[in-house]
Image 1: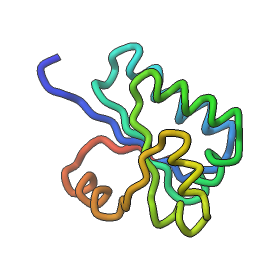
Image 2: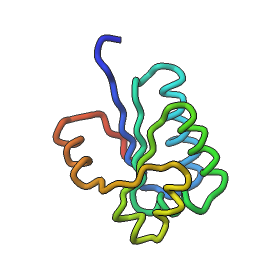
Image 3: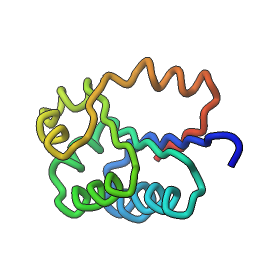
Length: 114
């Protein structure tokens, strides 16, 4: 592949079925099958709570990380929901995403919003 291709998934839906059967399944398979060179999942809002509380989703997040998916969470959301420490324990990067998300949008990077 000549050009690096990067996919960002802005994950805002706290439905566990959507998490397992779309967000995490697609991100893992995207790397395993070479559809994308890099995949970043951005936890935003209610997904921060879902990941911090649901062990099935935690296991899927770990599987995604083991397969090379970069998982990051909005620090403002995580702090407000009181889950920053738990996400960090799970190996999730926790940063302020407002400006980076704006840059992704302005750069016309590939972004899926779920």
